[in-house]
Image 1: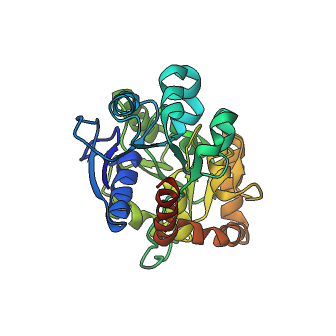
Image 2: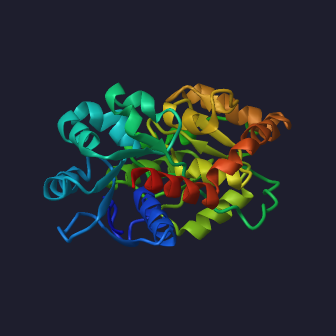
Length: 317
């Protein structure tokens, strides 16, 4: 088939939506299809559309459905679709969900966020990640937590910085934050935080290979988001044997499982601080998190993601 894929993130973007689109484009080409990717549909003929983001891609979805009502349409639901726009912008978001032949979500609990009448159209395709070549020895003089996420409201990006303010002098904890500031206000906030908080270091947006180097040397990752649709950084951390401390949002529980021991209540600075200090002071805590995550690795392989797309297309056709 000729497949047109729509993603709200442009070619040069390092945003998660673009990384997902690039990976899915590769998988669909491996399955024998011709694929074009752009931020909007330009009305060129296609046998099928795959649209990332029900709300941000709503115009392209509506146009494609109007022009080709009998052709295949797959809509991938992001975190903001599931946990914000389905409530704040219900008309375009629900229209995208309604006209889709099939819906794709990235974690096991996503069905809870959509109306029951559309749940039979939903498949879960978890995002794959490439394992690190090797883990690097952690720094002995510091106990480093990495944060990999852009600075925007959904990510609650400075929560780990707040958590390491005023730690005991005996603590070696640092937070190393990699991600682009959504606007100047966020950049200013991160810069000001570094001035008053010597344990927090913001590096801005770096190439992915440099972030992977940080994964290789960090003791653990903090994912402090207020909402996620199934963060790829979780799959990256799991296959990299990097323990995760995560806010207890549905999007993270849907990947790490109900019984994972690394959660803290969302936006709870004190609870996150307690977990970080526990990681530093209790030698068995982080290995326990790794043991709990070990069975999940098989869900985040390239082969698993390929098989999921192959099965979805075969069922649709």
